[in-house]
Image (tube, rainbow, N blue to C red; front, side):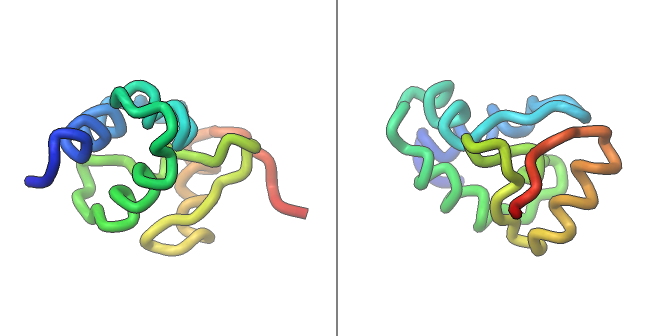
Length: 89
């Protein structure tokens, strides 16, 4: 199932409620590695388990960021959940 850090990241993301978000940096901090936000992104990019809502993890600047099912899909899912976030200019 992966490293301890991977399991922690996926567990944290699995608990993000509908309509809520965390940043990659916040997930990294909660997983015990505050400087591992890129690692969080890499872990989530490889996850296709629908029980783990990776779309609820956004960038620290408030923009949506990337998503392994496409950025447009991430924005659509967040919008449907009522999440407000910054749009790139």
